[in-house]
Image 1 (tube, rainbow, N blue to C red):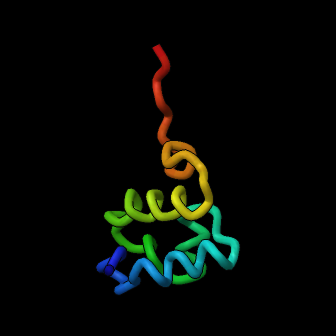
Image 2 (cartoon, one colour):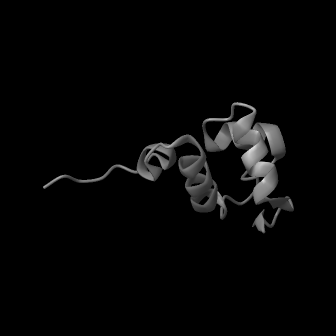
Length: 68
């Protein structure tokens, strides 16, 4: 499935980037180009990165969650 339409990067390439050591969206972009143009794929990249590394998506994406 295409994750980054601007760069034509599919989910397999993103997973390979993570397997090679990418741990941030910027690092994924450095390896395969995904997320380096408009940023519309950043949420999908964060989901894939979180699933592959076992980190919470909020931590990967840098979302601050308010605790009441």
